[in-house]
Image (tube, rainbow, N blue to C red; front, side, top):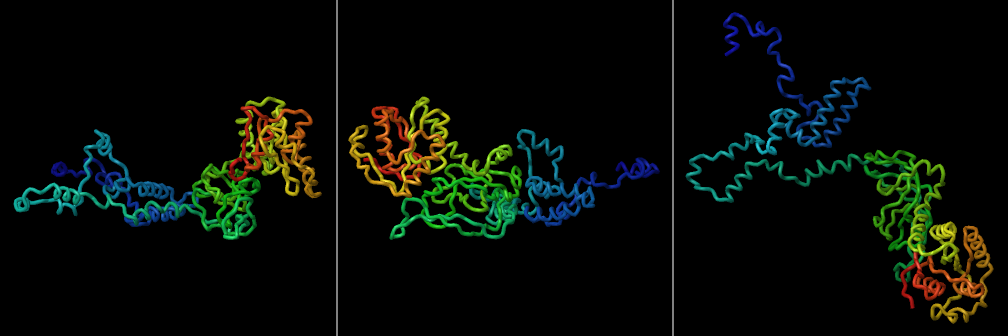
Length: 485
């Protein structure tokens, strides 16, 4: 009406406001571009399809490759809108990606209780009830009213089928997985338990063998591939609780990153890492298996090693770090009541890194380590009888001689243990008790058993100071639990 009045006075609207008035533009229309056409998908496209098309488009329109900067910005905006569930729903219903000032006010007022979502036209026919129908059918029951209310709601948005879940939720795992760079098989150190005549596994050391095995074809988004450099041959590797053959051995180790998953950004290629899973994550029947050329594991299973540590220590030394820390922890807990100059009994310290670490730590703490080294081929003299009495050991026959090979091995190990800090080295508990009786030395108050069997623990109890309530035997070795007579 106002425009007609202006024209009645002999001028046009353009004359009144100037040329260009009434020309539509994008901001005046209030509608945004068709983001689906911009990316190249239809309105029913899944997130996986949108992301795939977007990656192809955005590479073509990248400004560094000669693309249009404005089109590049529009593509990014379209991607942000269509991959956000709330923005996409708003865009499909209103044609706008962002909330207007009125929408912001309504949503913020009183918790958004005044928000009204208009019903689709297709649902109007089901929602309208004529007066004639109401007179004929009478007052609806509670169940009929509830069913009518359900019909008016958008049930498609309320129901999530298994197909919808696979399309919109599980695409991440398949999309983010990358192809394994290494294609050929790699060597694995596999273990098999010793079995009896009936095929049942027996206790004791496993039977290892090296065999090539293929890696899996894809790498998950939170996994890494580690090129192993050093793996300690510890008790857990030699004495695992295996139930079947063909299990890769090894619980810890050190290596360098060979390949990372798509969502790992804190590790790079050739970064040194310590493979040490959290306690309880892997069972003794199925260790993580570090004894292989390439290890594929989760990001949580590795710890990044600082560069300064790699410059100072060799991979072999770093691989022993967990055992050194465990040895320190054992001494810190159980040797608190000892004083410099007191003796500590070590059984089988030559069998693993933990024993040799305890030996060297005892030397640093000014303690006197007494070592017992039992070897195959040596005469086994056992103390028997009442603990703390001479009758338990003085009548033992020690006339039997060891084989020449066993004597040479014992001398070699004894020399090495003396270099590490051993005060004395004995072939068995009887030899230790006879030495103590000759030299009138005090027996130790603490014994650390690296064999951890019933016989070894019993022999160590004979060697402890009698009548001392603080005397302790600590078992940390791989032996099986056995009762003491």
